[in-house]
Image 1: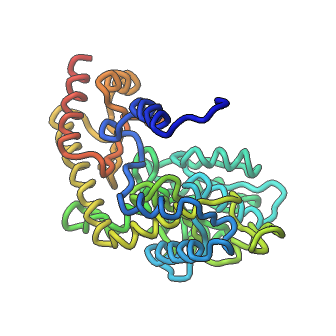
Image 2: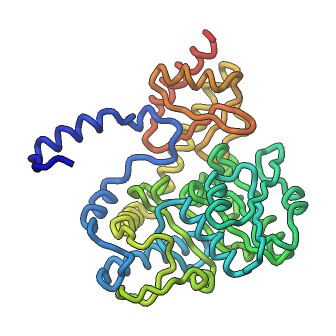
Amino acid sequence: MNRDGMDEKSIESILTDLKSKDTPYERVLSSMCTYPHPVAVMAHAQFIEANLGDPGLFAGTAEIEREVVRMLGTMYGTSDAHGHITTGGTESNIQAIHAIRNARNLREPNIIVPESAHFSFDKVADVLKVTVQKAELDSDLKVDLSSVEDLINDNTIGIVGIAGTTEFGQIDPIRALSDLALSENVFLHVDAAFGGFVIPFLPDRNKHGRGREYEFDFTLPGVTSLASDPHKMGFSTIPTGGLLFRNSSYLNRLSVDTPYLTVASQQTLTGTRSGASAAAAYAVFKHLGRDGYAQIVHRCMDVTHELVARVRKFGIEPLIDPVMNVVALDVPDCKQVRSELAKRGWIVSITRKPCALRIVIMPHLTSENMRLFTDDLCDVMRTG
């Protein structure tokens, strides 16, 4: 830190230069985040100083968070959900398993997650000292139910299903997992960090053969908790995640006394929490409504299908037909292809197992983006 302060114009100039080094989203095909909606940015700025960690001081902001939780719960099958805004899927997953661990209170607890689960569950293992067992995937890259069943033992406290896997955009058979959780008397956490703002708005089956067939939320009796990120396809600002429980007893398992605040206890992982994130989510939910989100998802799915159709003309196939706006392309030497695309300014990623070129079609990507990208991809494949 310099001794003397700098004027605002000088600081703005420095920040502008540094900002120019960031990759513009229009060239990013690997991220599950996007430009936030302007109404979310407006609300975020308006509540920038609000601290949800001390809600008695910010009563209006706390009311906003409760309404956001109510709106999320209603979208996911219950008007009586219990939860709070988090920093994103990682925190939500940690706290969900934290509550489950505390509820069961076993000496050596374990959970079962799919091999396709987000790496945040490796953090769960480290932070919570819960053994994370990884179930195999089937040929459609969904979790294999028989593998989950084989891994359940007396120390299993819960299982995890993914509604929109990070790598493949696949949806695990959540109904079957719900039935299994009930029969085995274990908890079921659904990680819908990405899919939570895609699945409810997928086109009806008469358009792309998808849509309403997917069950993943509290309408299924075995679902204990659910994570969903408004800062992904929800168009809110970063960081805005959501964690919901079926009933309040799980939140009580996370309670910590806070004697010097305006409330007696907290159930969140972080102490100071951004009220701006809650306000941003509230504003964009109210502004877009279900129809607005449906239009966004439908457009992303149209671009997704355009992408697949174009690469198929060049003999490139997806590992699975896209379920949502994530595509894993089966290309040889995918790491090298990724490197060559980076030289042309395209940021893509690769999956772990099997290795494929991973593309996320977020709202910042247009049909023109996809045409330019697929031209470069096919040229890279042609020239080696």
